[in-house]
Amino acid sequence: MIRVVLPYHLQNLAHTGSEVEVELDVPATLASLIDALEARYPTLRGTVRDYGTNQRRPFLRFFVCGEDWSLEPLSIPLPDKITKGDEPFLIIGAIAGG
Image (cartoon, rainbow, N blue to C red; front, side, top):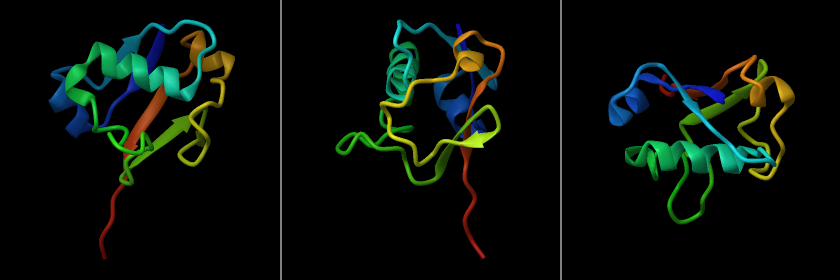
C-alpha cells in the first residue's frame, strides 16, 4: 500500500483524513499512483490532473522522499520507500499571492 498525504481541500472533496492508502500494481509510476488515487476517490478526478492535458494542476506540488517531483514525467517509477509504504507521497497545495 502506498501512503498519500492530501492537502486540506482535497481531503474535503474525498471526504477523508489527511493520509490515505492506495494499492498499485507493478510497475508503480507517478501516473499509476494518480490513476489509483482517482479510482479510489472519484471526486478527485480532474483536481490533481487536468482532464484535457492529463498534467498536474498548477497549484499542486508532488513530493517524494523529500524531493520535489512536480516537474518529473508521469512515467517516472516511484522509489522503493514509497512503494513499500516507508515514506508517504505528498501532494501539497501551492500558495500564490503577494
